[in-house]
Length: 367
Image (tube, rainbow, N blue to C red; front, side, top):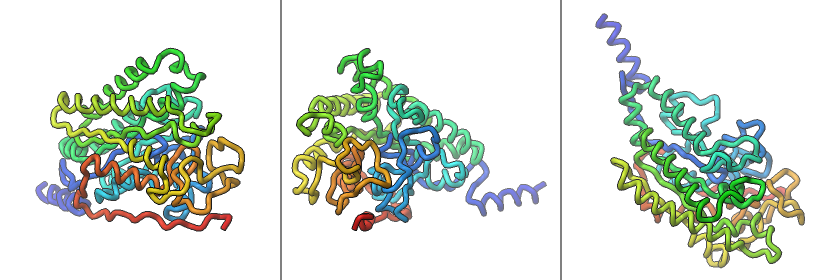
C-alpha cells in the first residue's frame, strides 16, 4: 500500500502536478471582442465575423491568417509580452489539454461579441461576454478535476484577467436602427443598461476567483474608417466619440466602486482615448502617414467590411493607423498597448516567457 502511494507521488512529481496541487505559473484569461480575438471565431463555422483570409496576419509568424483581426499583434498580445506572460490560445481550440491551460491560460475573445447578449446578432455566431464567462466556468471545472479544488482556486486567483469589450455594443447594436436597443433606449438609459450589465459580469468573475483584473476602455471609435465613410465630410463622428468618452467615465467609476465592494480585488481601468485621438489628429507626430483610411481596402469600394485576398494593401503598413475598416494596425496597437502599460503601471512578472519584438513588415503582395 505504501509502495503504491509512493509510485503515485513520484508520477505526480514527474508531471509537475502534486496531489491536490500544481506548480503553476501565472497566466492570463482574456475576455474581449475582435480587438482581442486570437482565433475563436475561426471555430464558429456560421460566424460572419472572420479573419481567416489573407491578408490578416501577414506580419506575424508565417504570415498566414491566425484569427487576429489585424496584420499583426493585438493590444493584449503586446501587454502580455511586456509582462513576460505566455500568449493564451483560443478557448475553442479543441486540441488544447488541461496542461496547455495551466501553462498558457486561455483567450475567450470573439469578434462581434459585446457586453450585451443581443450585440452583434447579425454576425450570426459570436461569443458575448456572458457566453465567454460561461466557457470560463467550464474551464474551471476542467482544471479542478485535474489538480484539485484547492490548487485550482489558487491558480485562478493568481492569474491575470483582461476584459476588453464595449465598442460593438455601440457600433453593432445601439447605433444601428435594426437593433431594438437603438429605439428602446436613449444615450443615458442605454449607458445605464450597459454599465449595469458589466457590473454584474465583473462581480461574477470575482466570484469565480478573478482578483487581478484590467478593464480596457474605448478609443475614439467615431474615427475608425467605417464611421468616417458613413459621413458626407469624411470626418470623425463626434456623437460616437462622446459615447466612448461616456463609457470610459462610467466604467472607471464602476471599477472604483467595485474595488471598495469586492474583497481582495485589484481591479483597474485604463484607456488610451487621448493618445489615440491625438494620433489620429497628428499622425506625423507619431511616425504615421495615414490615420483616416484602411491599409487593406477594396479599391474605391467603401466600406469594404473585411480584408480579402483581392484587397489592395498600402505600401507601408507600419505607417497606417488602421489595418481595415474597424481595426488598428500592429503599429497602432503597439502605441495603444504602451499607453495602457503606463496607465496600469504594469511591470514584468519575472517569468520566462520572453517578450516578442514587433514583427518585421513583410513586403506587400503588390510590391
